[in-house]
Amino acid sequence: MKRYAPAVLVLAALALAALPACKTMSSEELKSSIEVVDYASAWVSKYYQPWPPRLILVPQISFRIKNIGSKPLTYVNFNAVFQFKGDPENFGDSFMAAIRGKAVPPGGTSDLIVLKSNLGVEGKNLAGIRDNPEWKPAFVRLFAISKGSTPVLLGVYDVSRDIAFKEPEPVEPKK
Image 1 (cartoon, one colour):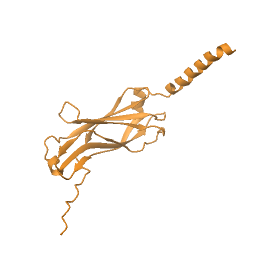
Image 2: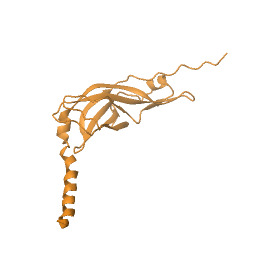
Image 3: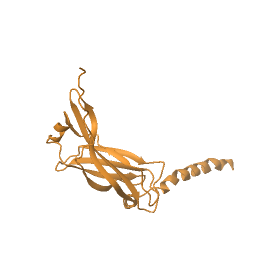
Image 4: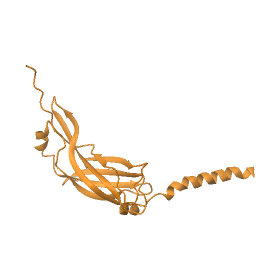
């Protein structure tokens, strides 16, 4: 009996390794299980420096996903690819492993997911950015990927031109 013990252990290990594969979702299953809800977007500060004046604004999106499928959603990553309308190239992206330990059950909705671009528009201040001809209308392509799937496009969304940043009031010298 001892001669077969290593073979049994190897088979048991292979069986345990294959169990997580049973929980994977195909790309089609993933896409048909996700509905994007509560979508919002704005431009937020990536970097602010009062002197010498410098401000970098980047697009940020937030959303929740609703599980409209029949299986719990686990291990779902999201990728947002930002692009100015009319430009052939992307100007930034953001990746997040958003759904991990707590699965989204069928009919359930995820916590808020926030993705902020790594690149944006630079100026000396808010007025300089608003007047910058490089600050054009933008959109984002939102992708999801899970274990066993390839990236699936969830949708293409406009990025608002709203700015969620307020410059601090200038500090007056003491008299």
